[in-house]
Length: 141
Image 1 (cartoon, rainbow, N blue to C red):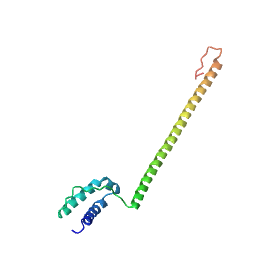
Image 2 (image 1 turned 30 degrees about the vertical axis):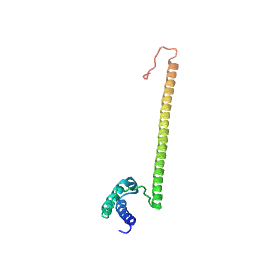
Image 3 (image 1 turned 90 degrees about the horizontal axis):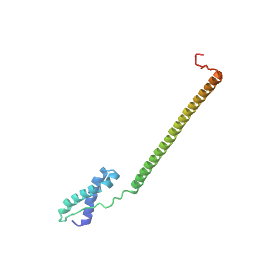
Image 4 (image 1 turned 45 degrees about the horizontal axis):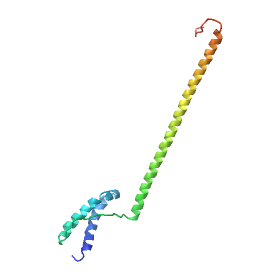
């Protein structure tokens, strides 16, 4: 063993190359402890043969390729834009539904007003025909 640091780097790189490709980027960030444990196990076994004792292997920072970071940012941006479009469409839908409900209510009230108006006209005609007499009009007369 001529260069300890180079050998440790080689073992770490080997473990990382074997673990991380099976994960998504989000999983890799979430499971840094799993990667740390795998690195520690590998180093404990391999470096123990040379008399080294490994107490802890920490994964403190994961730095993906700049293109990957840009791609992830674009994905997040598109998700947010999609969510915003969905919310805007739901708002438009609510406006249309409420406008239709208001139009239906207005039509109902207008119909009720016309019915009362016609009832008043009929009552007025009935009163003018029977005014001064004690007769009652019915649909039969």
